[in-house]
Length: 89
Length: 194
Image (cartoon, helix red, strand yellow):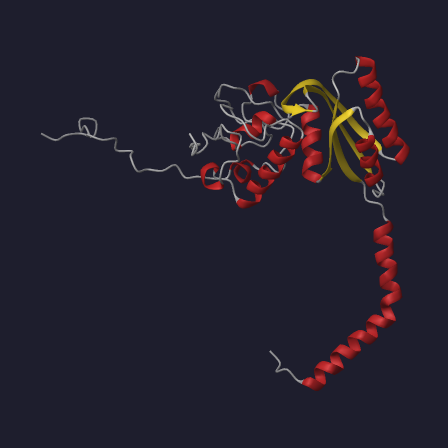
């Protein structure tokens, strides 16, 4: 009896090992300017301790990671974001 | 490629220098003219006023800053009064502050140092930050004011592509010129320190 694709049951998820292609969201959506006053947006790029997330996690290109970094640092200067925190998110 | 010949090289450079010496007056005119052409440069100053002051005094401080700017010859594009806001850490034992953001443009910008010095001396300001806005920053502020950039929604509702002048409420993604495929289900943010 021929087993169709739906009949086959796997022990582990067939999608395991597949990786979503990481991309830089700024290049993809054409965002050129990162506002330092916008804490909600910048929360995406810091972890729950308030530290900046590395580029290999967020997927940013180097150019935009630097802009993000300087925006976060400006926000920290203006007390829009903390320098040190815990349970930020 | 011609082989490097000492004689012709010297000859060539001499000619070039000779020409430059002759034409330098014209070039300096051009340079001077382009320098003098007065490009409008845009800046943004964000400052935090002490919250213990009365409302009138806070307003007076902001007015004073604006008057200072006008005195220096800047054209004020926009004054954004974000108002009382919680600070992420305490500054001078205060946990809140009144935020103001003034966007202005100016041509000759050497007075900015004096302006910042004035702000530093002002006891009513807790913090200040002056930023030069590039063309993308100017455009962003413009779009933000006219409503073309939506604010982030907490829930990610699927939306169609948002044209530039679309109503803002539907757009979970922030910026204009969004392609058809929706949001960034962003690559998962793994907390390394968790």
